[in-house]
Length: 133
Image (tube, rainbow, N blue to C red):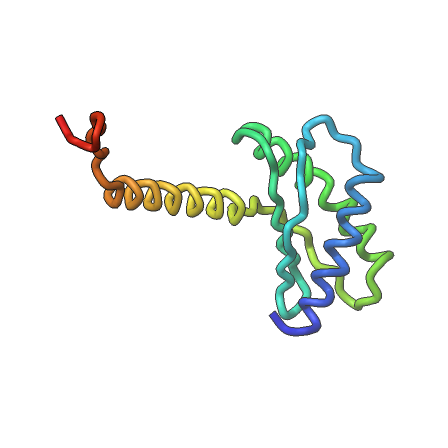
């Protein structure tokens, strides 16, 4: 991304976050976060990555609800942005958080396996006088 598209992505993220919170009351919206925005160099598209907490149905419902209101969001962006063209808003699920959790889980499993390999065998109990059985 160029510096211009990066700056525009940050402005779009801020504007859309506020717009969704204030203007959209759709029962399908779950617990969501706009994680990042990728704007094409010609400013024709803005891919909005969403992180949604919940199961697959809640994720799908949230993405469907946001996509249904994409035209309203684009109209809002037309008023908020000072650009000749206003990007078309596309929504996609951001799977980075899930990938991060999976990597952390795998690293923990590896750590636990290594720890189990390097654990010394238990020492036998001592009798009086320090003699072993």
